[in-house]
Length: 268
Image (cartoon, rainbow, N blue to C red; front, side, top):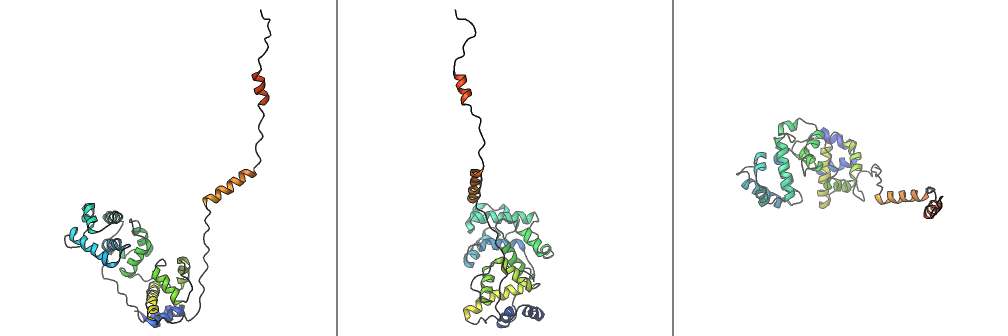
């Protein structure tokens, strides 16, 4: 780990600096090659499952659909839904897996070499077009597969919980407030996130250092939502206050039309 990066973060943030000294050098080495289709397919399999169950499903996928190797997008497209369901994928995950395969063949999801040349936000914009793939999943790919240096996954529970523990907060930080605070960590927010993950490990071990200073998170005003029922109530009150329109009386006209008219001629 580059000592200059750790020195930069420690200088910008004394609390994070104390955490860095307690944990030691960062241990994070991304793989040499990134295979986006395989990584995202594995992410789909792991959604809402523990690691053991997800790995069992992926093993069945390799055996039943990939002929001993991880299946290609063409094989996933051609695979009957029953085959993927038999491997353990839910109907929603089957749909997500086939959508991933289709978008890979359409180059919405690029190959690893192309992906490595794209900026972070473009990668997020492209990969989140796949059904079932959200921003958090792509951020994990950016960190652990591509080794991008400036990613702060503010929606990650572990990052938020680690921040709360390391900075001695009474409640979990809101994602927008954490993002605003994390501006000081640029351009090394990935390293900051890695140390925040480690903070929970230190807390469980009872070795988490006391924060070097107390901080106050930026106040992010919440956007007020006006309930539809409230709008209807206000509209109803406005109509009630409005002056009713004056109607022209038709009583006389109705009575006049009801009376028989006298004939002007003589009756014989």
